[in-house]
Image (tube, rainbow, N blue to C red; front, side, top):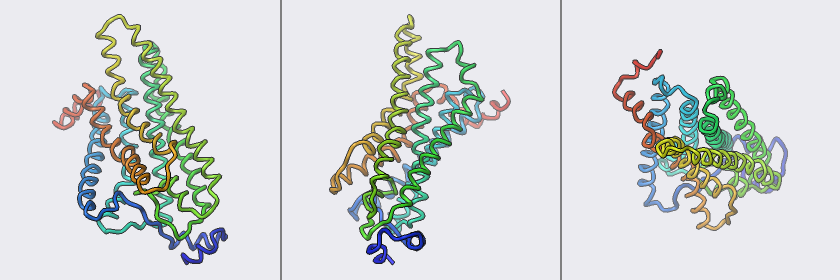
Length: 330
């Protein structure tokens, strides 16, 4: 079957159906060195457990503490949920492959992973932009904050983010589904992503590349620009505050968000908007960048937000001490 696909890469729907049922990709993985596999398995297992536990603690602490039922923490809880789903899309499969010493992933499994990876990854981007807008309204228009950031509007914003990310992911996944793949099917990454999949296709990927450039670029750059514009207004407003204590308090509410934005967008822009070659060194660099935004950023988010936020630390303390029942109904 594989040889048939190799010789007839542009065959019709019947061949595509056969390809879907039995075709497999091989993932490059996290490292080519066998002696590193056990260390990588333990390292990524602990990272995954800490990531899920940390983000879940944030969601539970916010949900059970009435004092944190504000737009800022509603968006933070949504970001933590997205991070749990985001890292769960890639890391468990990588762990299974390391443990079983197998690099295979089915054609269907690859496309499913791609869809959810794009959905939850783009959700992170849109939520970070939404959180920047929330901080802009809170600092630049404090008197109208409760009216502008009402519960209904916050729910609509998060719902719109989910709908947009699903549509973007569906578009990219459908365009990948149209491609045929040759015998050179080692995906140069540890999960199924757009760029690596296009590299192993034997079809014309010009349409995919254009859509990735314009749609993918818009999904990354437009929210990033909106975040920068928001913080330009925020910094301008903070500098006009006469009290040094007031300026410090305003900056402290934005510091955690800025740290996450810098870490996440820095690695995403490197991975998607900077060209790379097919050399092994470049593959290792791309894998390192992918690990940063798919594994490290979701891991660090709970620590960044909890360690830099007094209200969050207090809520986590109350939750861990079992005093959450005092918050319900307040």
